[in-house]
Every structure is written in C-alpha cells, then in structure tokens.
Image (cartoon, rainbow, N blue to C red):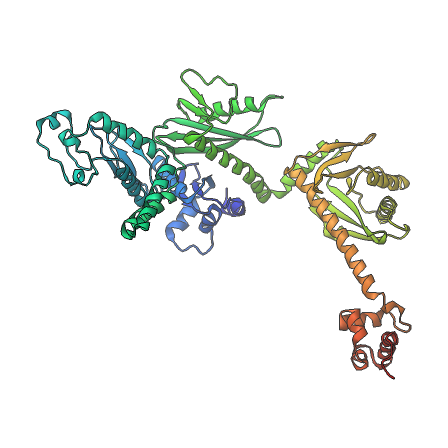
Length: 610
C-alpha cells in the first residue's frame, strides 16, 4: 500500500484506545505503539510537517497499518509491552531494550514474601500483573500487608534455619504486621492459607477490599485522625483507578488461542485470532473467511477458519477459547472453553470487540480506496434482490407533499451509480388535480416527467422508487402504461418509526423483500428516501411561504409582480409593509406607487379623527 493510499484510510480508523502495528514491505512488524485515540495518533505520523528524522524514515518504510482495540489507555500500554517483547520491532528503541512493567510476585519459598519486581525470576513464583503504574503495584502490596500479617524480611525461613533458633522477632511483629514465623510463632499451614487468599485477591477481587478501605477512612476521619485517613484515601485512589479487567490475563492462562467471529452480509464470516502466552497477548490477526462449499453453516465456516489460522501461525495451543461450540473435533489433548465469566470471558470480549471493529472498518476502507467498486457491489445486490436484468445504475424516486390539498407539489430525485445527481432533480407543481389526491398527483407528475424525457431523447431510469405502498406503485405504473414504457417500479416500505424496512416489488403480484438494517443496500435506500422527502418538503414549504407572504399584495390594484418583489426585498415582510409610512414606501417604488400601497393598507384601518 502506498503512502497516499494509507492516508486515504486514516479517517476510517476507530477513535478508541488501542495499539497500532506498522508493517514493512516484507510484511514484518517494524513498529508497535499505543494510543488513547488510534485515529488521531496514527494520523499524526502522516502529517506533511513531521520534523523528526527518525519518524520520517519510519513512515517511508510503512506499507500497512494494523491495530488492536482495547478498553482503556492502561490496557493499551500493557498490550504494547507484550507485543514489543514478542516481535522486537526495528524502530521501537524505547521498550525493546528489556524494559518492562512491574509485577507483584509471591515468591516460591517457605513463608513466601510478596514484593513488587520488574524482572521476576522464572522459578515457579506466582506473578500478577503487569501493572501500568508502579504506584498501583505498591498500593496493591500495601493493601495486602494491611489485611494479612506477611513478613517483609529477607531471612531464610526453611524449617532447619528456624529450628536453629538464631532469629529474633523484629519491629513488624511488635506493631502487629507480622506473626513472627521466624521464631515459630506462626505455623506454615496458617501462613500458606493467608497466601492462598492473597493470590485470590490479586486475581481481581478488589471490591471487598475497596469497601473496607473506604469504611476505615471514614472512621478515621470521624475520629479526627486526618493524617491516617489521608493514607487510606491515597490507597483508595490507586485501587479505584486500577482496572482489574486488563488486556492481559493472569500468568496461569498460558499457551491459549482465542477466536471470535461475526457474520457478513455476503455469507462470509470475519474471524479474530489472539494467542495468549503467560497471560500476554502476543499475536493478533483478523481475516475474512469465505465459504468453499455451497450451504456451509456459520459453525462449519468458523471451524474451517480456526483450522486455517492455527496452521498459518503454527499454533500449538492446548486450549481454545471460543464464543460457541462449532461442533468441531479439535484433536487429542486440546480443550475447548466457552467462558461465561472471569478472565477468559474478558479475553473473548476483547477478541469480539476487534472482530466487530474489523467489519466496520472493512467497508469504510473499501469506500475510501475504491468508492465506485463498493457502490457497484451495492447496486448488484439490489439487482439480485429485485431480480432485475441489470444493476440499477439510474434510479429515480418520487414523493408528493401538500397540506389538505393546498399548494400540492411533487419532487423527483435522481441517483446515478449510487450517488445523488442533484443537477437532475426536478420539482413539480400539481396542475390537474383538485384536492388531496396523492395517486392522481403521482400519475400526473410521472407522466409529465417521462413524456419530457422521451421528447428530449434523454435516458430513462433503470428503476423507479415510490415513497409509498401499493397505491403509489399502481399510479406510477398507470402513468408508464400511457407512455408505453416498461420500467421496474418498487415501493419503499416503512416501519413504525418511518424508516425503510423492506422493498415492495413484483411483476405479477407485489410482495415485500426484506432489507437488512444497517446493510449497505439499506443505507442507500434510506438515503434515497430521506433525500426525496427533504426535497419535496423544502419545495412545498417555500411555495406555501411565498403564497402566504404575497397574498395581501396580490389584491392591490396597480401593483404588479416586480413592484411586489421590490417591496418584499426592501421590507422583508407584508407586516412591515403594512405599517410603513408614506415616505418609507416611496423610497423603493416611488411616490405614486407608494401612495397606492399606503392607502390600500390604511384605508382598511378605522379612522381615529373626530
């Protein structure tokens, strides 16, 4: 993809937090970044006035842009870290030098210590995080130490060392922060029971602790112990800002594949794949998968896509997290999980968020890069839905507008190749119909429209749409029969919210053809309906307004249309004209005509002279 093509698709990027990945000419990832707003951040790289030489060099190497949508800026930061560690992009000079984010570690040792570390050893210790902010990690450890008497010393508390009796209780014991297992005052069983509860807490059950902190803060404040209450307030702020629903899961979720899918309008599906290693997202990919066999179900397509993606990325994951059971034999030793809650459910939701975004952006990009191709696809779908001989490249739609038969007008809007052709729009004042007769008005307008096109040898439409039901379609067909024309006519069926919900069509007998809401065809029909309604209403409003404005001036003998226009242009309303003095009226139209107008309005007023 060229830089110009990349710039065209930038407006289609989501305005959501996430990570973006730039790929080079050979498909390799050359840069990974995080963003609070993906569209704004990625667009900044492609501004003409970029000053940084490194950035200009990077932009010249970019051939495609991918992204992963997440729930918050903190999640984007964590995901960025894992992607950089996995792919080691050439242009990421800040984070690929083994810098990492803090984790809370429960050490694998007798009477385990709990600490904040950036590079924990892989020795079987339990690890929680990573945390986007070191303050959050320390606040979490402080919370644990407030709730449980956990040792903070570096002593070797193996049974042999404790039995030697060489240790002595420290200050932490005297302030009731530790039960002194170093001198045998706390059993290993009791200590490990506390550690199991702490591990459960670190996996996400913070609600209870936050409430305890809040109650403690309020009690201290009530007792006027404000300095101690401030400590709890600061810890509360850390914990309330800490989001348990990370992009990453706990480290025990390891070597797992996550898949989600969404159906497309053409029968294909979009499938998102994520690979999780030690709780970190290390691979993300979304593809569009088309049916290879006629009549394949969504489940069969999904199963085929899973197989292809696992082969493509040489995945050896032993667990698959899926939104539903595709009825597929995963193979020996492979577990399929359909989560309902918890960390695995959150990973599935992240995958689903990305596959939905992919589908939305796919259409936006197609319209940006090749708008004519996308519109041709829509017109082809409309042809197939109605069973027409060719795509309706030229569509015309009619609508009437009147108020109890007065100022009756009609409008015709024209769409060519799926786009409005405003130079071809036409307005009609109803001439031959008395009273509110929509069908007769429609017959008159359609006959006038196409009689004129025939006489001028202009091209006729491929499809006529009526903003109404059977009666309107019948009126249009009657008018076409008079002219001996055979043009397909369909009606726009509306739901209770006055939105297009179906097409009414049929050569012998009319029947409803459903249109999927939010599909591209639906949006085109909705645009046509809104445009013809707007055009007709605007014309009717203007006509009625002029009629009401001009009515009193029409009855003044000796005042013609030009003089009337001069008066309205000068005074803007009939009310202003009626209250103007003789001198004011004479300015735009002269003293003679000014007197005629003045006497017309003032002769209607009762005399105030005695």
